[in-house]
Length: 164
Image (tube, rainbow, N blue to C red; front, side, top):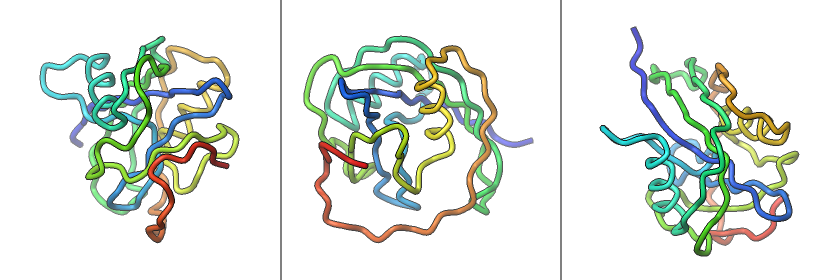
């Protein structure tokens, strides 16, 4: 019986239709949606608002539930727990986007949803595709990708105004 972790994320788009992604500062330095784990006794909505405030320094408005994605598999070669990710559709309500949690993320950038950076998480790829298709209330199983190569650190700005 595998462990199950609960997490949250949000697909946030700018007026040009680009999607906000953050790059992990450790591990495989994957690009993913902003978000994080749900704390004990915390609702998914409160968790996503809190996590995005912690990572980006901005407040978001939650629009709706894009879907619930169950991430499974050992594509990275480790015995990782399954993760149930509540992905919301949101928009920036107040504040300027900036890296606010350098221990967790090293960069934030807006990306064209048709040209996501690599390596990107499997959940991000599925959720962005569903968001672009206008779906809501999706229930989807997502399998982890094979372990990516760790990209070299670069001196790119912490927030890229335009990417892709």
